[in-house]
Image 1 (cartoon, rainbow, N blue to C red):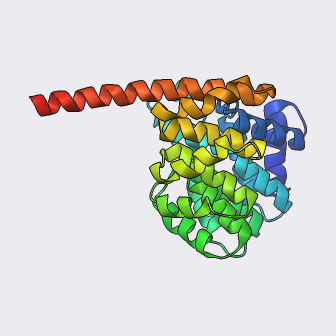
Image 2: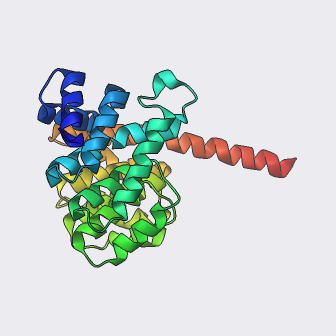
Length: 267
């Protein structure tokens, strides 16, 4: 029995389900942000699957993505409170070191290398900026999509995010809006505001643009979001209300910072 088969058995034992269903469960945890469903045994097993050339490419790719939320939470909490981090520091390091080796191994299938990078950047490492820059500059559409996704997590790509906002590829465009949202990218405001105000903006892009508007210019976002709060589409209406709430909080924080700055100057 090879390493991959052993990993499959550990996954089955962790959840009492088939390996395929366990992978799907871990992936749902990633999507919903509930990384606490991850544990040491599952993380080790998923890592073993990602590393195994004996496993199907798609399964390896899915296993890599399933580890992303746990890496992000570990990076944020920095292991200060082990009860709130689903994996130990040694497991975190093992995953990241394994992912780095896999990414730089040209013999690993492209899909696996892409997903390894997409998961790994959720806990930024020193090798990520060069990897992202190379992926974006490759001219390969799939790698460019991965790169723009990664720019949401790793600093230093403002100009390329703005460039990607002009992409005619709908998926790259969407990831660029999400990246602009995460960094509150001021230069993206005209583009984002136009998306919010355009009745023809596709729904996924509109939802992302609403969040970005609240992040980039919270004091002005409410003006362009208020009409969407009355949308007949319940999801759009709820997203608009949520974005306006975020904008209000963001605007209040900006006012507090301005007052602090004034106090510093007066003193």
